[in-house]
Length: 472
Image (cartoon, rainbow, N blue to C red; front, side, top):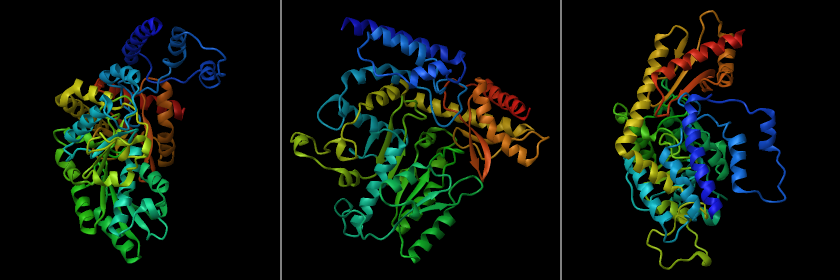
């Protein structure tokens, strides 16, 4: 244990040094060929090596090449910097190394609190047992959709777990054109098929068009296809748009659909002072997916799925083989009865530490600061003569396009496709691209608590400089 103690102290120093150096270094840089070869082409070692030697390798070959999301000028995808509290307790969770499938131990009990805290933060009604931590929103969506599938079968007097989908009427799923791809993956994985995944058009603000949703539902009913599941977004990844949740909830109730909300990135946006009314209706969902490892900054991986009624997921997943039977378990049973994972990591410690360190006030401050910066960036774009704002600033994602006045439409399209990689390689900022209304667009997601208005100026200047390099 003396070797572990010495190495552990080195790890603490390396971690603190790395995090302290991130803001002053490049946001991202390519991995040189020598280190790329070391990282990906190593041979299986015939004998072991001392812990301290391993740390030297990590220092020299791993830490110099981060994804970039720890930097205040990282605006790509939806990847936050790690919360200090989450970083601090991660080794302790690994040291305990429990399986949080169930049983009577700290990991299981703390997960009950972590899930309840997340529900309280986003004002989602919570019954004990009605939620669990997952690897991310993709797995949360699989769990929610599987639960809805079983619920729909029960309404027809069937049990999907017993019969599968054999002989079942087609079940239609409704997702906006801006909805996340994880729902399509979940539908295909669960045998529902993308053939019955209906894409609902969006309005000029990239929110689900509820009139179009009604038309699609009516058309399916006439064709003998059963509408059963509608997924709205509380903060899309492309523009940060929040669908008209209350309207969608009303349509779902009217037609007997399961109402799911993808709040993986944006659910916490409800905490922003000016955004609250936009989220009206989120509390009406049958299931809600949200990712603590996004806006909240819990170190990856950590997602969450919340349910209005815990009976649904338990009916879908509960299976207790004899070797796991626990006659002393409480009435809630094991977490493994509410999802597909049997061995589950101790994610709750990172969630608990992050929330406990920030407190509700600190989380509100984080959300308020980043959404305010997003509106500031939107205003800077609108005030410029070479950028176009493509969607309203609702959460902390801004979608826009660079449009130098001397370039035509075709060249502008190609330029905006090329800008993200050019900016990334320059190393002073990081953003990613997407497509909106069929055209190339840029998007900046602001999640870092230390990002400043000056960083936003650097971002726009870097885009201009990269554009000149590309056109040259």
